[in-house]
Amino acid sequence: QVQLVESGGGLVQPGGSLRLSCAASGFTIGDYAMNWYRQAPGKDRELVAATSASGQKSIDFALKDRFAIFRDNDKNEVYLEMNSLKTEDTAVYYCNAGIYFLTRTSGDFWGQGTQVTVSS
Image 1 (cartoon, rainbow, N blue to C red):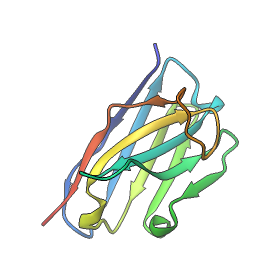
Image 2 (cartoon, one colour):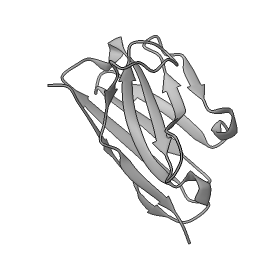
Image 3 (cartoon, rainbow, N blue to C red):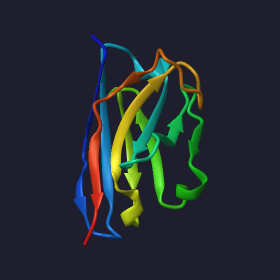
C-alpha cells in the first residue's frame, strides 16, 4: 500500500524555521520525483520544491533563498527546510511523488498534508 505521511508542521512565529518530513512506504522514492506542494485558503495548490530521481532540484523562484528540499533514499524520506518564514507561507503542505520531474499527473501519489501556520 502506497503511503506518504507528512510531519513537522505547526505554528511558528514570523522569522522562524520549520523542517517538514515526508515518510514514504509501499514504493521506493529513488524511482520517483519527490515534491512539496502547498495550498493556502482560497488559493490553488502550488509547487514549492521538487527533486528528481536523479537528484536535480528545483525551488520556486520566490522561495529559493529560504526553502530547501532534501531526500534520503536510504530512509525513503524527503524533507523541506523552511527558514525566515513569513505569514504568507501559511498553508497546508503536501508531499507528492510523481514519475516526471516538474510535471504533475493523475498518477501521482499524495500525502494527507500538514498545516503550517506562521503567526505572531
